[in-house]
Image (cartoon, rainbow, N blue to C red; front, top):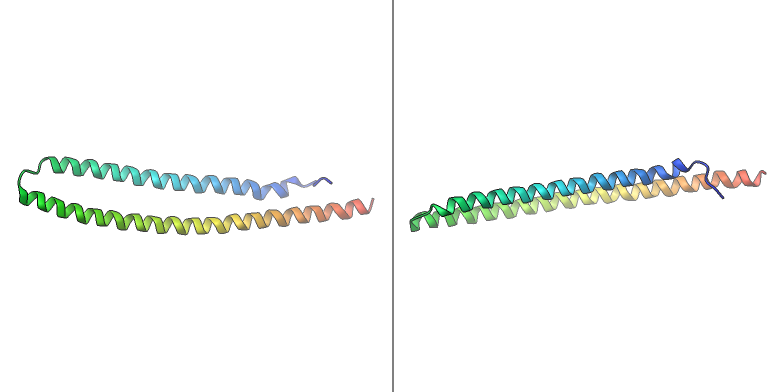
Length: 119
């Protein structure tokens, strides 16, 4: 048996490939930006630390670093939450595409079966 309307069957697969590509490009861009931001921050803080001469200033610097570390942690948690929500939405779209693909294939097969019986 051969499905005549192969485009109807392959369209959801094509959509899935596009969705995968878009999803992973978004994740990679987000991870790249986070890494670049972190690198820049570390470079700035290292430059600031080399000029500290007295203990009071050093204590203040350490306090600032603790606040910065807490802020960075909170940002990572927020990013993780956002990534999780993105993955959940992505998963729902993938499931929908597979359901569409399966439904379209069944429809095409159903069209072919009566055509063969009438011959």
